[in-house]
Image 1 (cartoon, rainbow, N blue to C red):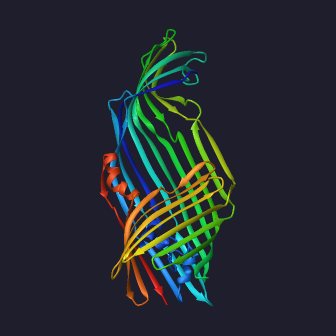
Image 2: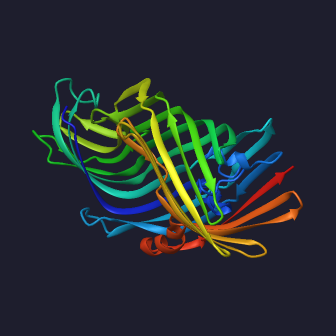
Image 3: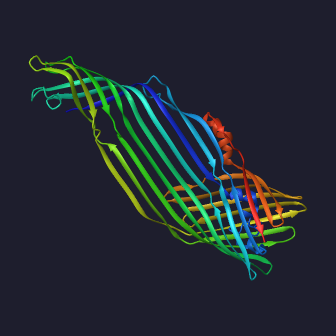
Length: 492
């Protein structure tokens, strides 16, 4: 049997929709505008910044508790992707894909901590949310198309039992068919970090000093799934170019079954924990503050597993004839009447691959230094820091500038840029690099309770609200450019 199919779309109508959602968080930026001491070691004070510079705890009086949080902020862009069809002979020049693109800065508790004083030593424990990135997408495509199929086969007794046992009639069909296919695709991925720290501090020789132990679990997950299924509808087949002395006057309907002719699923999960020793020093003068801190993490292993399942067609499908009223005259060698030809049985090959193992992750080391100069009621601060691993699989860069003005309530303004990067088995994974800007203040609600407030924006959200809609030719149905942050500190 010779079975050859040539598909030529002659008319295409597409029902297609897609939505993409990106969720991210930059707690480092939020906290910096709550108080610059969260990132500038020269300004760390009490629980503020102790996870970066444990020397900050030397300024704790009796006990201190603090919590900082930020709400969600989201921009939704409604747009269309345009798929050109210049290379396909259809009546359409392009397909427009309605798409909703959501870009959301996720809120939550950025920091929580508690510090106590014990025999001249200051002890503290705290948790700080790390930068994160999550991406999810879904697309569903239902093309309704008209097709012409050039089909060749050999009619035999196996296909048409009324034929003679040794009859063989090579035939070429020109088929017209129409119907639907369905393509569904889903994917998601996330990169999350969170740090937990215990630290101790004391003032020695007029210098605030401290050490701490920090654990940072890192989770990287991803999955995707896609499937092509559906069926072409009915059409009309006309047999042409009969061979030997057979005459074919029959008409045929055609049906094409295509139930899940392609499927692909994959999952990957990586997790590990960076354990670091943190240290720091800080010195204050009347007009100047200096601070330096650092961390050293021990080598560990990245535990991971992955799996990939594919189901792909391996052979051209088979055919059969549903004999409704087909008449085969073997004496006069005439085939007449009507029948339905069904193209079916898309044979597939299923493949499953998976892996599980440990990937060495070398230890990291880094340091951050900063200063603040004060003249009358004005303050000017700057900091910079770098952490990396020996093999270059991890890098973190931070730098920022803060300006302050002290009146009856302090006013602070700043700019910060930071980037954290992992490379796991040659695959780069990180949150987006960002530049953030904003300001903040604090004031006493009651004697021992202080409220911190900040407002900030960043390049990611700014691009979502101001730049991306113009590039994509869409409009933002929901738009947010700046976010608010809050903190409460109680000293007793």
